[in-house]
Amino acid sequence: MSSRVDICGINTTNLPKLKSSEVSELMKKLKQGDKDARQTFLYCNMRLVLSIVKRFNMSKSNIDDIFQVGFVGLIKAMDNFDENFNVKFSTYAVPMIIGEIRRFLRDNSCVRVSRSLRDIAYKALQARDKLAQDTPNDPKIEDIAKEAGLNERDVLNALDAISEPVSLYEPAYNDSNETIMVMDQIRDKKNNSDDFIEHVALKEALNGLNPREKEILWLRYFIGKTQVEISNEVGISQAQVSRLEKNALTEIRKNFN
Image (cartoon, rainbow, N blue to C red; front, side, top):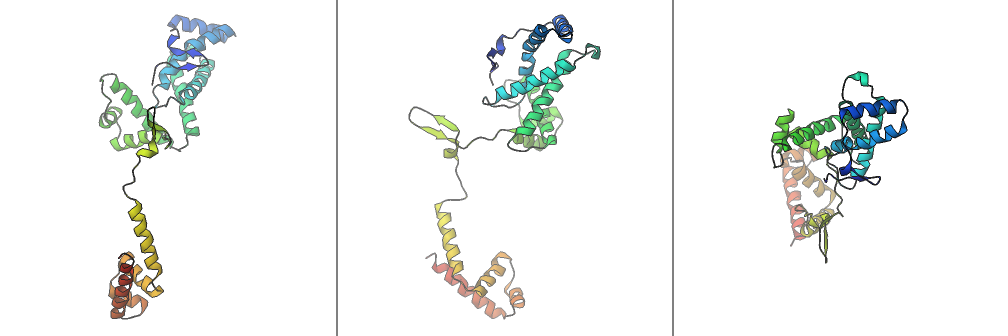
């Protein structure tokens, strides 16, 4: 994700930084109803919102939405902050901004993910960001799990759960002549045209059997019973079961020759 985020015509890379004394002074003025101080305070703290948004795995298509949700959290933090808390404003605001974003993601996700899973994912993302500061390579899952004090499988499942679904029609490669979409790169190794034809042929072969033959094959090959067990269940001799099974298999083979 680029550090540049344009929102409401504002380039966040050019946002000014406030000193602690400036934060305190603006806070006093806005609490007294100074609208200019309020606007200045929010404008200068957009950088804080951006730093939090970057912790989440957001696609470029919805980063503006998440930024605005985080900005709502910033406004709530500003309105509820009291200097008697004896903490920096940023320390107080960060949990509120994060909470606002997480609620939005939970309530608006097309895939419902449990809160516990999102909590694990968030801890994993924090650990990943911390590790990324010390190494140029992407941290491995086992390293993230160790840093966060979590189980590797839980971390993997949680990060996978919060990953955004990819459209099958999203371009995977594009040049001047041809666009290859995600669906073009999906290969079904289990099913193909030959499997389909064989499935149809088997279905037609089974439809050609009489009810007793179908019952024998079902009990024999799908339930897994022996010929003796089948003979006791359907009330015929084991020899009759054997003959019916043999005739049924012969008829089925004819459809594949």
